[in-house]
Amino acid sequence: MSSSDIFIGETIGTALLTLLGGGVCAAVTLKSSKARNAGWLAITFGWGFAVLIAAYVSAPLSGAHLNPAVTVGLAVKTGEWGDTPVYFAGQLLGAMLGAVVMWVTYYGQFRAHLSDPEHIRDAKLGPEDPHPHDVAGPVLGIFSTGPEIRNVVQNLATEIIGTAVLVLAILTQGLQDGGKGLGVIGVLITSFVVVGIGLSLGGPTGYAINPVRDLGPRIVHALLPLPNKGGSDWGYSWIPVVGPLVGAVLAGGLYNIAFA
Image 1 (tube, rainbow, N blue to C red):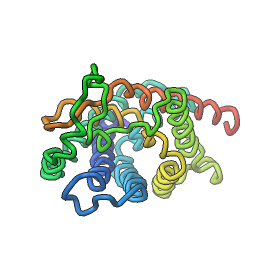
Image 2 (image 1 turned 90 degrees about the horizontal axis):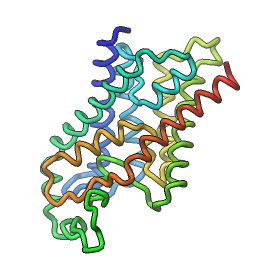
Image 3 (image 1 turned 90 degrees about the vertical axis):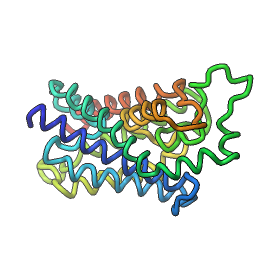
Image 4 (image 1 turned 60 degrees about the vertical axis):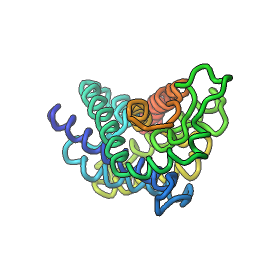
């Protein structure tokens, strides 16, 4: 794969990922959405289908990493790091583009939701909140993840564990078939792995398990002209970046010890 193929494939694939993944969060959250209050099952399956579609589209160009943690895990496994910056650049750009298109899709719903007096009240900061950018706004959860209980050690551990499960499941694909890989069926299996992680491990932090899936849309949230949107919770933002990368290194190391 050429560098241009990798960059284009990862940009398109990660844009689809965050468009559809953020889209299901918007559908469940926003006022005047037909899917409002559909619940956690809708979100977990929505993200699983987002992975399925994004990976299927981008696989011929870039191999469909769509996630710096996957890129790092594969690099630890193979020892090949040369294309890593290209993958990262395409993934971050795609994540941001997908978040913007999601906002355009739900533009009217965002306006209705954020003009509702209840949500305006939620977005206002009190005198005890001296750092507004570190306070999660009422729609930040559509763009990025956040913990139900703020505990740095637990939140970081949750992201490490969830990502290690994801990356190990990807690295071990096809071992039962002489290491040939699973082809198209591997995309389906990975999508179900994402659903399983969301159902089983997603409750504490919202399971970012992907640095750009969280960081790219968080940047877009900070930049978009959303009235009464509140802060982007930058104080938490490092956890869904560092945790998945650590989890990827651990998964790659475990693969090399146990399976290589």
